[in-house]
View 1 (cartoon, rainbow, N blue to C red):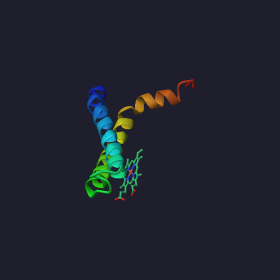
View 2: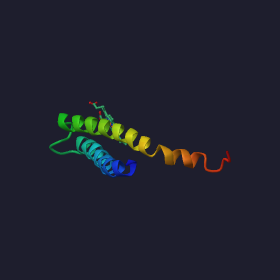
View 3: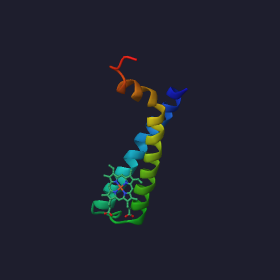
View 4: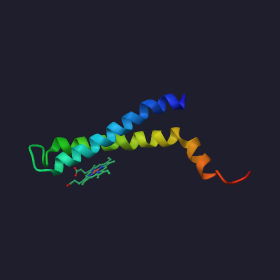
Amino acid sequence: MNNKLLKIVNPLLFVAFLTNQVAMLLYKVPGPLQYSEQMTNLHTWAGLGFLVLAIVHITLNWRWIKSQIFKNKKS
Ligand code: HEM
């Protein structure tokens, strides 16, 4: 079930990150979109989407993260 959700969350996470970065690049690089409000807004909203998806991604992988941290400890 987690695995199925991750198959949706992971590509969305990638797209959000890419959008965030490309928007900031277009905002900075000389051209028709340089210093445009659209690119600042796109950067901000894609960034917020990225943050939310990253939290979901970590939550869904939490079991794996814990297993890595406590790998060598015998209980
Ligand atoms: C590695 C990732 C990121 C890079 C390299 C990056 C880069 C930048 C840069 C260079 C600026 C300053 C633009 C300027 O005023 O000249 C900026 C502004 C901003 N970034 Fe990011 N950013 C990243 C991720 C994020 C994320 C995850 C968010 C989440 C919300 C975000 C939200 C914002 C906001 C709200 C601003 C201010 C925009 C404004 O002044 O209107 N950024 N970012």
